[in-house]
Image (cartoon, rainbow, N blue to C red):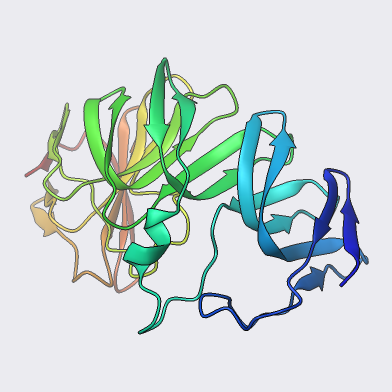
Length: 251
């Protein structure tokens, strides 16, 4: 196959899937406007971006041609090629998260349209600890950051507890397919305030009622505003409490 031209250079799309780890997928996909949507490369190649140089085997693009996601490796998992085999060849990089530099082996890197990194998703079995506004938090999924590198959201490991003015918050959400780490359980604003968290364990007591998650498929989402707490969940639950007039407690 001929080289595929992009604003980041020319890439050789996959033209031979005989390798046992190659996926059978369309090597080049296009948006409706004719611009390239994704390229599955014949071999992993290094690509130079404003945020650094990264290996890529699958690249996806926004409609304007800017890179959206980059997968350093994108092999087909099977009885002949395991995730452990794939991870052995996965490269690691140093990323800026908040005020820290963290060595991460990314399964996927997501970018804002501006070219700044939005999120970094980990490989299964990997774990990093990130300094958040609520203290050090371990995550097995990854991290989402604002364009200025401040933490936007994180999926805490099971058992993590945040101290809040309403009691203990236990953020956690089950994700069957860990394809990306955006919009994770615990979300922060750019000033470091906890905006919301998704939970399976936190119980909320307000107005004489107790609210909790139904099961892992219907978690409870708790929103923290200025002087208010909102709840959304199963069975069309959507309530807000004015904490100046209603006592709200987490447990």
